[in-house]
Length: 91
Image (cartoon, rainbow, N blue to C red):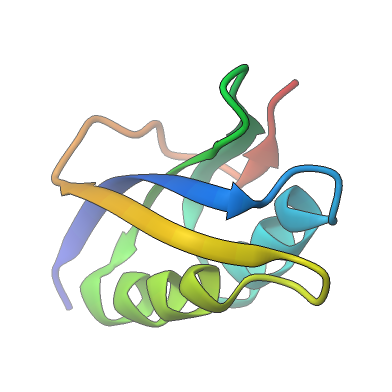
């Protein structure tokens, strides 16, 4: 499988609803490295690196969001620089 990466900026009701912990749980399940963090403008930023098929499934999960969230838009840019290592929440 080929390794790829993406940056996703997720907008909607995505802060204060457990979105970062939701992303962390699924990133670990799909063996994805990178990070998730809240942005000052109310969006959530995810940078992820892993097998392409796993990344596509991870994106589908991010588009759904956790219970209590309302994902309005996911702006994705593929093949950005993402560090290897364990997926983490950045503050």
